[in-house]
Length: 183
Image (cartoon, rainbow, N blue to C red; front, side, top):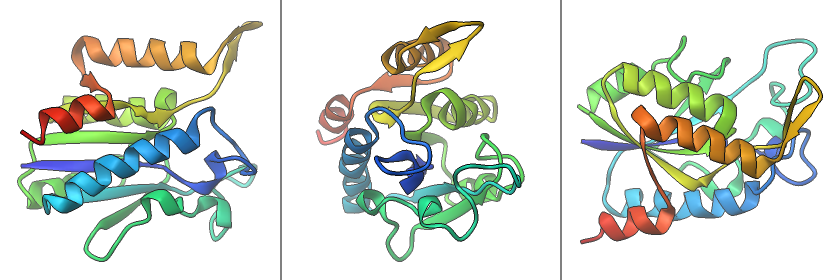
């Protein structure tokens, strides 16, 4: 059985949010296409919502508008919403329990941030034995800096997708995924 995991597509990551990502709107629109496909096939959909409990947090604070799931991928009745407090969607959540309940062995993953929560969740999922497909254009990230050197959001996206494609996930675009799964 296959399930869709939508990771942290929350308002703070969008324009005028507290931690905007490059390409967040476009990624959410691609995620919406995948989400509609899963809904039409009556396959399990699980939304992950990150809430930051750290006092110094600048985004995803509890009970704020920015922590809300973006309207493009708003959950509907029957879809599971799991709250997490760390990058890995499996840590201290009941995600694994839900996947086992539905006898899921394959995950399709979309979400934000590619270099943090998406990466941590994909790696954990593979380690737990799931076959993973990551939808590249349904993910968003941001520019990063280390030791005085900057990497653009596109460079970060390329680096993380490349690393994950080696062992952890099959990487596809939305169109590639939908074409392959509507035959």
